[in-house]
Length: 116
Image (cartoon, rainbow, N blue to C red; front, side, top):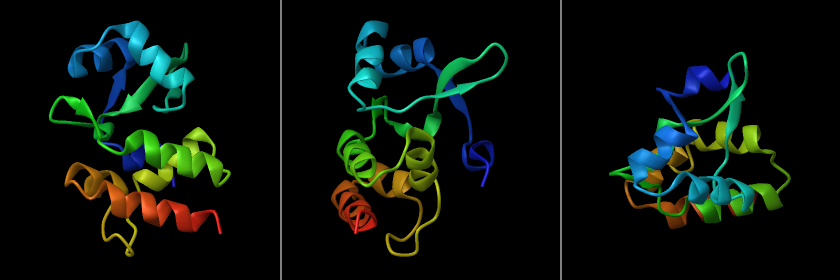
């Protein structure tokens, strides 16, 4: 499924930095450390993140841990985003919504099963 159909909106890295109240270099560091995933979109390509990764002015609690587990399971950045944004009956609902509701441990457990 196309990522755009799963996302309600996109934030550029400067917009994300402003929304979560951290300096832009810190956002770039999170990307380098794979604690945040970005997708290059548009022409010319601009790095962006789905608005769903932000909840109450902060990055989703548990996002970095879930991304680590997904990357360890062999998912690339786009596949990891797609999984986080797609309904999963085992959770139930979308993993990003479960994390926003405080169920980040359940999401991480579910992601761990993907590696087996």
